Length: 332
Image 1 (cartoon, rainbow, N blue to C red):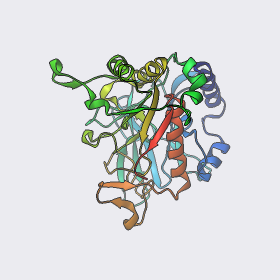
Image 2: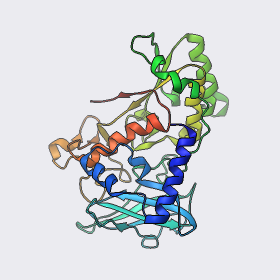
Image 3: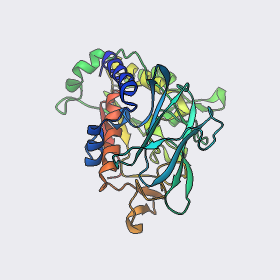
Image 4: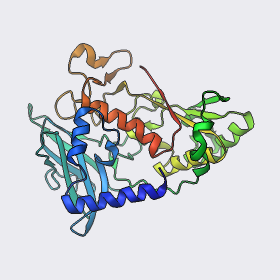
């Protein structure tokens, strides 16, 4: 998708919420419930919008077993009830609402009160584009905007990624590939890697790079394989635009990008997907299918249509918004 097409979609979104009060259409709900929605990241989560001539943010979250849902954040003192969301009347389980005068860079979570056992929890946004640097756990409202310069690669990448052509893949974990010893041995940033890693790949003759999961993850030692933020590159090395710059730089130098992606299991951290609305929403309900004792993580319930829409949308998101050339699917 070109920058112009993304801008056009955003303008359509701004128009829609002014007219209807929601970014979500009946057709979106139909596809979501059928398990065939592949662009949920345009509808759920947090999105800059205009309503009644006022700039703000539209929020939407799937929590079908919630009794109440509020957006809490640094803009309202993290207080319950000041910015409640409303459940849609279509039995989709989606809660939504518009909050004026907040936007890019604001910290937030969803405070969810379940219909069961007075269970109340603060959850990060499953569709957040950006998160605080772990061990902090808030989601961040973030408008993805980047002036891509890889049009030449995108026009011919089918040829560049042809299975009949020569392919040599370099697998790399960004956090440990190269350090900066004079600065407490820190990892390279995305933008630093856009120079140093790209130069190394060209010198050594690789055609592609495969990144161990860059998706946000709470436990650094998992190397990203305990993914929690399925729509956000980890903030450890920079912003989403910084990671876009890395991909852009690789493409401009003729190097393809493959991302490891983990659609089978997720960590049990309390602010994440597990027991999301007081029920086993994303994970299997049956104990024998729910938990992987070796990985110490929950297993996605792929038999649930809405979960399939969530994961399909995550895969499409990295190909669309981050121009990834392919996904290496882990642990299936």
